[in-house]
Length: 340
Ligand SMILES: O=C(O)CO[C@@H](C(=O)O)[C@@H](OCCCCCc1ccc2ccccc2c1)C(=O)NCCCCCc1ccc2ccccc2c1
Ligand SMILES: [Mg+2]
Ligand SMILES: [Mg+2]
Image 1 (cartoon, rainbow, N blue to C red):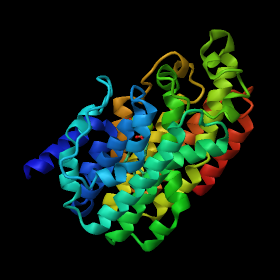
Image 2 (image 1 turned 90 degrees about the horizontal axis):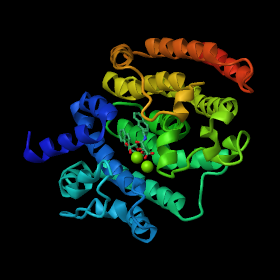
Image 3 (image 1 turned 45 degrees about the vertical axis):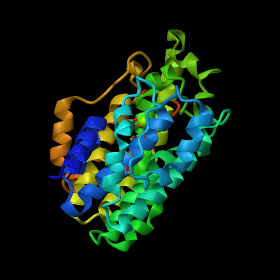
Image 4 (image 1 turned 60 degrees about the vertical axis):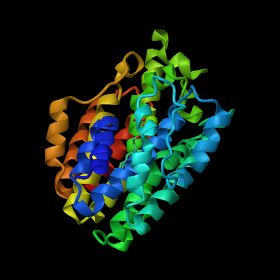
């Protein structure tokens, strides 16, 4: 391993518990391109997430990041001291050196997704622009996660591991990202509220409270749980697309890479559903043993479908009959059972 490669995989393990493992298990042809795709977008996200950076500094960086990745020697030291992945940007020149060694086809895919994501993040970072409607919510999640799915599908098809059809089904690739991102947004309500980051759409929370922060008041517990279940129901709407996408993936290394984050997400969503701890605790996550079991089991479409069926039934059993979405969740779980 050259020094650069060692540094690259060090940054990967430092910035992501969940994605580092699945990226490192990828076939040699895709491991470096996807690792760098991850690090470049994590670098972009580290600028987006840092609320201590003035907008008139932040927004230009978000929009020009797709050009910065070609500038040898570039680093960024404007992150606040508490920004969790700031070291990645302080040493970003190593990422750029490795990116410039990739095959041009991968460089082009990465740069194109980075440009679109940066433009989308800049739009939603603009003062006064918030996630208000369900359409805004889908659009924001498309920018920060759906686009990752599109880029990954393009790489799978470009290297020949998967059919060109995988890159063509942008709707399914987009849903792969939306399911993961919406699960995290439902899970991280309290952390994001503390950071004054509002991702839950007003079209949803507005039906249960006058202000989003009212959801954490103990006297609003029943409405807060109905709101949470509405967010869970919204995320579940992507599951059919996720299963259809996974059924297209034939290469074993690509399949595990795609399937593991999805089964972790359905397990997390089931834990989050109807769980008042979302409003009282941060860092809610599934048990280590469950994670190990899911990573071992998610090896083929039949087992993954069975895992989704298992959690859909678990989630349905947890649903409170008084919940306005009780019927809808039951219908959706029934559909999942049919698709699987
Ligand atoms: O700061 C944090 O730690 C969390 O940040 C969240 C946020 O700020 O909203 C948020 O940041 C989003 C912007 C940067 C995207 C970074 C990323 C993530 C996973 C990747 C996997 C493979 C290749 C490239 C990848 C790029 C975040 O990390 N959300 C986690 C869900 C994103 C899922 C992306 C995704 C989409 C489709 C996929 C299909 C197959 C396999 C993995 C997939 C992964
Ligand atoms: Mg982030
Ligand atoms: Mg972000």
